[in-house]
Amino acid sequence: GLVAEARVVDNSGREVPHGTPGEVEVRGPNVFFEYWGNRQATAEALVEGWYRSGDIATRDADGHFYVHDRKQNLIISGGENIYPAEVERVLLAHPAIAEAAVIGCADLRWQEVPVGCIVLRAGLTASAEEIEAFCLRELARYKVPRRLLFLDGLPRNVMGKVQHFVLKERFGAAR
Image (cartoon, rainbow, N blue to C red):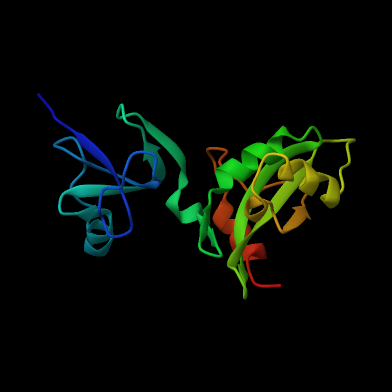
């Protein structure tokens, strides 16, 4: 029958130990073999038969995979990896926050810092200081958004997914 393989690798393509985050790669007869008419995209996605998924995950000792975020959303701040999805989960637990997205913004000292783009629930208020204190109860300080942008809504694609790249284009420059 069909045999598919999956692994978690670092940026050099080396498999990482259990519990270490890395990019998920898969290969097998059921994995696509090219982007039609786009050799460059194919070369970036397929390395020695392994398809680079763009998903950051860890694998446990039993072989279960836990996806953390998309690689393109990863924020690297002072050498530390910050997964926006983790910070967003904490923000969304705040009772006054209806929607949240976290992006990396350029920073001279830290390379990037997390910035929270939030939409408050109708009729509710929360100060930036209150939200920061809330985040500090759940997150390491370096993961807490350095700035909060209070928005009327978040840009979404037709599937309803937040378009982080649109927020990054709009707000990601150094301040």
